[in-house]
Amino acid sequence: MNDKKIVIVSALRTPFDKYGGVMRDIRSIDLAGEVLSGVVDRVGLAKDQVDYIFYGTTIHAEIAPDVNVPVRQALLRAGFPSSTRSLTVDRACCSSMAAFTAGIREIRAGEAEVVIAAGAENLSRVPHLAQGLRWGKKIGGFELYDVNAGFNYPGFGPVSVDTDHVAKREGITREEMDRWSLRSQTRYQEALAEGRFRDEIVPYTVHTRKGELTISEDQGARPDTTYEKLATLKSVYGTQSITAGNSPGLNAGACAILMMTEEKAREYGLKVLAYVLDATTVASDYENIPVVPAMAIESLLERNHMRAEELTLLEINEAFAAMPLVSTKLVAKGDPELTEYLRSITNVNGGAIAIGHPMGATGARLIMTLMYELRRRGGGRGIACLCGGLAQGDGVLIEVLPE
Image (tube, rainbow, N blue to C red; front, side):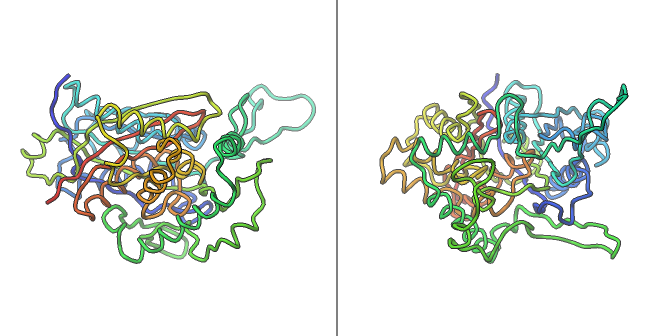
């Protein structure tokens, strides 16, 4: 292991599209190729200077028609040399943050100096599956299985139900979830109007029957959201508090982050956007999914001898509104003042409820959103974290130095 400092020098993403939107027929592999090229082109780095690409994706049924090794296909289509090493990562919603962590470890192990961590998903393109057709059926029909339906894990149940139970256990109400969701939508619209996503989002052009259509903003936000509207929505999947309004959509999008040793950045004359201080992975009982972001935060704070009060910003994925609400309360150990502070610095530009949550891309999106906002504020330390299916969690601690 080496102690070389690891830095981020480029980070970008496509706009996140809504379910059934303009990207609905685009392969996630093609979305990935766009950001893989873009993240190096932005800083003028040659593609043959990238040692390794780690790539997160989650819904394998979408990739199935393209067989497998999506990152290998994406990088070759994007023009990277065939000698580029790569690995596809599936850690549910944590996948692209797990890809980022894998890149850190590869650099620390001395096996690479320049790494891309990326991720992509297109939930609009997930097919229905028909099981049992290979050997035929003498009588009766076949049932189509919708992979999107409820994100059930066989034998475990919907993550929405687990989230609902934990939120209730931790004293988080439906009203709090709806008010957090309104906050997410409102903060997002404010950030969008002020151009705060300009650095991270690159326009994406879709070829349609009516011609080319270029989108430069996330497509799933709901600017007309009000608390009154949220409060009227029915709960889903038999829960008491989980609704379409306090959950993200089923989205499409891709992200990529270029990181390397500080030494390499200086050699190539590249500007350091942020320093990567640490990364952690955690896991809990499968039904404890809203708890694991707090576990990741606590792990990073303890390992880096920090107090929660020293954080400048937090990004906690809004897999449901319950996640940031439960996690900030747990990190604060029930202290109402600290809970309020942590919530005030969390998802300050809105979160996945407004931005979208293409699972394979979200982890990287959290890191870059955190980084660009820290830069806008003149520096500081922040943690990006999220939960993944069956209560896995990842977190990354970064620092932006004042310029």
